[in-house]
Amino acid sequence: MSKPKSFTEKTSADDTSIGFDYQYYYFLYRLLNLKTGESVGLEVKDDVHTELQNDFQLLFQLKHTVQKTASGTVIALAELDSDLWKTLHNWAKIICDPIDGRLPSAAQLTFVKKTEFHLVTNKSESKSNEFLKLIEQFRRGEIKFAVVKQHVQGLLTKSQDKTIQEYISAVLALTDDILEEFSRRIFVELGEDDVIELVKRAIHEKVIDESKLDSVFARLDSNLRSDNFIAIKKGERIVIKYEEFFTRYRHVFTDARSNELSLPVFKPVLPDDIFAQVFIKRLLEISDLALGDTESAIDYTIQKMRISRYFEQWVQSGELVVDEVDALHKEVILRWTNEFRGAFKKCTTLQEVVDEALVILKELRRHRFKVSVSELSLDLSHGELYHLSDESKIGWHRDWEKM
View 1 (spheres, helix red, strand yellow):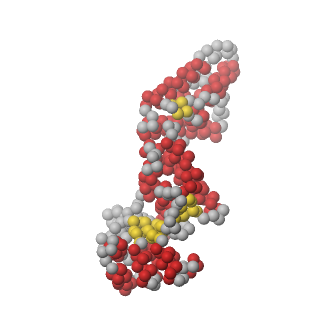
View 2: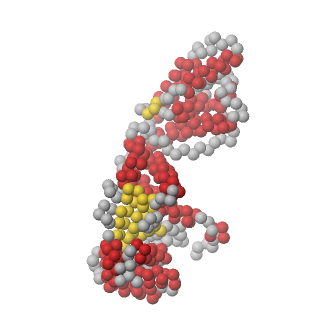
View 3: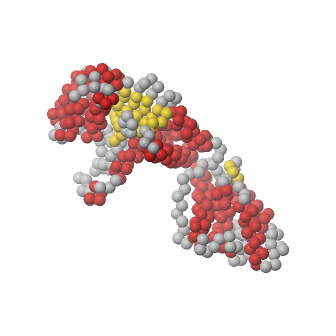
């Protein structure tokens, strides 16, 4: 028996939100499978639709549930499941929609013959769902349509739910020739729970190395969501053609296929005391940073943390090996040594020492360092300087090792 939900849980947007995300990521999955001359739409002709070259279309209804069985598995799609019959009801209404000029049966039949109807859900298979078994047998030519219709009529009598009865009645209201063609074109895809993994698999099939899947996914996801938001704000429908998708997002893929290192999404967790960090103290010593300048201190900290995290991820993913990271550290320390050695010989006052230290720091901040064959951005290069300073490998003040 499931645990009763509190009022807050009942009104939570979590279930609705995951349903929208499920729909969106399936839309992205269909985008990644587009071919020349095809297009994909989001909430236009259906939850998701694909238009093929030969005036043929695929309609997709997406149904996601967070309901679990007592054993913790996703519930099955029952024969009288509301998701199933609401979907079939919606399609029946689309087929005979007079607004789209499909009141005459001939227009309905033409529409059905050029359409496939796909229900995609994370619900699992139910061994007792005879309707789905009959639909599959009918599509394979193993039984006559009359068997399917008779079973649906039996379900109408069997159901005690008025809403389900209305859904089934709408389906049975189609004429026999149309209902027969419709039944032949119904496809139910069960157990599609991890749509994000589905998207990543499609990205991988675009000849993208596994080590870069997460960064490509993040870039594509972020840019597509942003573009969709802008389109909706303008009152435009979200329908993307293959050529448009290729033009707009191809650099996401070409960048990933290059030898450049991936730049994964980075969400820093800042230390409790920003100013207690070693590298921050080194900057305070030469007045490059003021004690109250928290904003700059945070920026520098993020730069340091980002490059440190990237080193770990690049090594873990196989994009770099440890000796390449070590070689970078040695190169940067050598450049620092060249600037630092002898720089303070003419300094006679503490202010001159500070001024000379600032010159060294300013010069090294101009450098863009290379790791393996990839040149780091200025942001990451600065992070490398702060990383080494935090490890007490380099400093700026003449007496930094004693301070």
